[in-house]
Image (cartoon, rainbow, N blue to C red; front, side, top):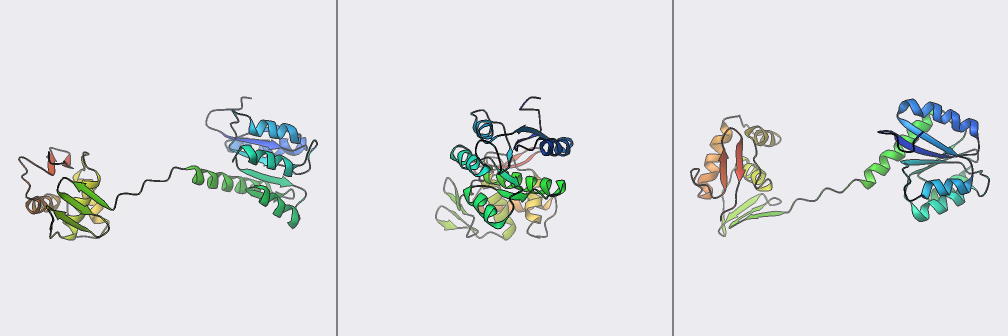
Length: 241
């Protein structure tokens, strides 16, 4: 079997109990996993830390020929952050603490149910995915469009150094358009954003609020400096030349 089967979660199991490896593989394979087993400490380190290692997680025994699982884990952690679930007959508190301090993501004694193994494996995979996910960029506290400044935190807007007296709906429409500057916002999208704040806003009233907002901006729908109507699509914030 290829180490990279399409769409499957790839698990490296390092355990000298071949019967247990077959059991775990038989249980996990129908659930979308692909399990590759090796049976010694040195081989486990080699496969886990290879330059093209494809593993989503490693299941690691402690009692291994060559060197023990703690040493395997130390060497893996020198080169990789792959999630490691330690699975061993040595389940006393001291061994669990050592394993976790060396860098294990979880520790499961071998008197386990396959359902618990699956649950713990999925948990370490979720944590790993959350840690590796890119952090969403924080929106700026203030958006500047020419002489227009929209302060999202203070919920205020200033045009040519003069504060704008905006209703809550008008401010939300302005902020939504400013954040999406250069992209069309449909009436439905604008309506949904206003509804999120429980305003009494209905479909065609979006046009009325936009018209009022334009007046306060000194904008002209025929020659817009800030808010352009995109026919059959919605509205778009543009910047003054």
